Amino acid sequence: MRWMRYGKRRNSMNATNKSLFIKWQHANLFKNAAVFLVGIFSIMVMLSHPVFAAPCFDNAKSAYHYLLTQEAAQSQARTQTRININRATEAELVALNGIGSSKAQAIILYREMFGGFKTVDELTKVKGIGAKTVEKNRQRLSVQD
Image 1 (cartoon, rainbow, N blue to C red):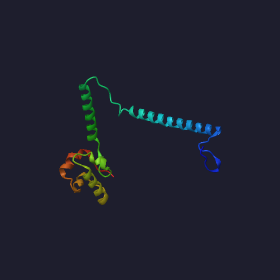
Image 2 (image 1 turned 45 degrees about the vertical axis):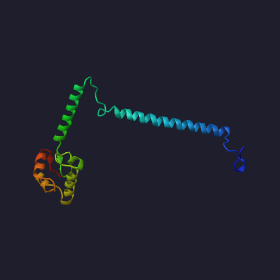
Image 3 (image 1 turned 30 degrees about the vertical axis):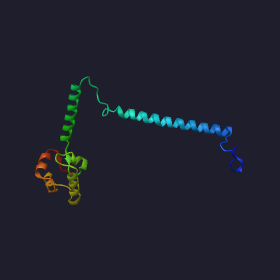
Image 4 (image 1 turned 90 degrees about the vertical axis):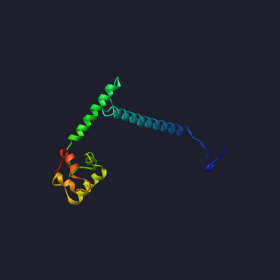
């Protein structure tokens, strides 16, 4: 046998220490199982949300028709939303026709440097945005403080 310092043997455990160790292992096992079950439950709840739960179709034609109607509804919602150019975020500005990330950042920078816009037509003062872009988006643009 190998002896450690002070005369104690390595890996020696009395009955009390063994029972405490076993209880500790069981408690950790139950904690881990509980965390795992909560995680599985959370995923199930998230996936049952209507956004993730798409309906099943018996043929491809009805599935294609469903996708077209969903896309049309989303497109219509996007085009009907009015955007306040004095408070819009980059993500909201990018949703406009002809406005990409760099132009949206330019609008925000102009707004921060010179203050809010008084009219929609003032948007043409931003570099890279012309009268045609403003006209394409005029119905969706608003100016409010």
